[in-house]
Image 1 (tube, rainbow, N blue to C red):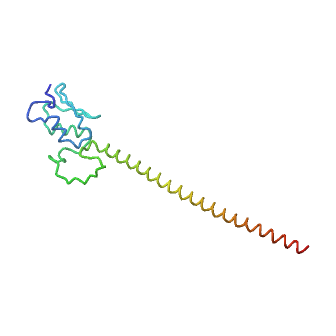
Image 2: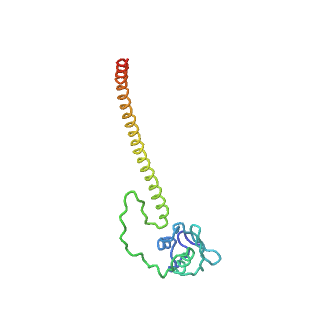
Image 3: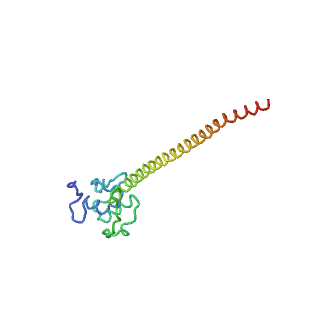
Amino acid sequence: MCAPGFFLESEATMSIHDLKTRMADVAGIEALTMSLEGGRILLRWGSYSAAVDAAASDAEIEAAVRNAIKLPPVSLIPDKPEAIAAPAISKGTPSMTNPASTGASVAKIMEDHVRMMGEIQAAQVRILEASLARQRETVAGAVGKVAEKVDGQTDDFLAIMGQFANDLG
């Protein structure tokens, strides 16, 4: 067996830490474990696994890991990540420096979006309810005033009709 963090002591073989760093683009790689069994190096992370010969080169180990999850061949991936200007991240957005955390970050963003949409909808419903209540109050008030006016004119009308009936008499 080997010392924690290393699976062989040769200089040509990289440590678990080196693999995790070099393959940070591999989902779940931060959970990588390695063991030596029956002359083979067994690599396990998340629901994936790969096996290589105990004398496998660093490139062969990387290729086995990438093939296990169908990533592009190692030859298409630069040895060192190029410096890419990071987009400005707002204080409310989680950092996405670890590709494996992208799913969780997207889920959090969507949860926040759904929550905000619910708050917006609730506010708009309150505005709608207030506007409809104002309309009801306006109609009730206006119809009430018309009814009061008609009722007041009814007394005058009845008096005139009474006088007319008396005059015909």
